[in-house]
Length: 229
Image 1 (spheres, rainbow, N blue to C red):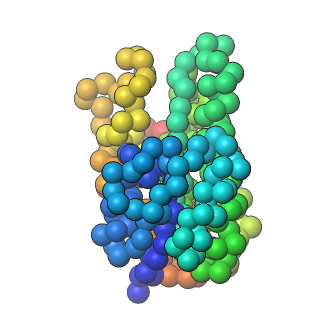
Image 2 (cartoon, rainbow, N blue to C red):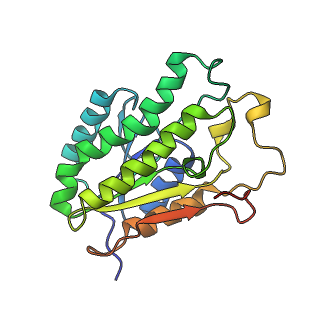
């Protein structure tokens, strides 16, 4: 028997995979709670915050938990990147990627843990296939996503038996994530990418596992995505 979703906190819920997960959670009977820098199109409980600011991220979690009466699940979809050679990307841009993708993830999960312990809920973190393999001119993104992989695996051991922990490793998706990149860093027109709603279904599956049963890791990518170790 699958677990009811309840209140699910979603970072980056205004666009891309986060927005697709908002809709998937709703369709599955859950209540999405969104943290994002932009206001979501969907009519959901929302707090505006920049995940590069850990204090602001934690405050947003606390506000949404209070408004909703608790948190049953968390999905950390928010992410950013800064493509380019290490000595060509500014220190500010490079470090922002790590702050948002890794430190922002940790800040949100840390703030949500008291609520998740009460609900025996589940955390799903969002890494990337570039958290398992590397690409040139993507050192900040790879460093942050490799960090999410290590963080999540350690967290699963730390919280075993009390809070569920799932590591989601998605491949490339048809989202606006690539829109602001220079042309050489955009996927080619024939790139094999997933639809975000397909990946969102995997998030709901992980969040729906009954207490004591966990999907520890999910790699979800287009069937023809390039090979990786």
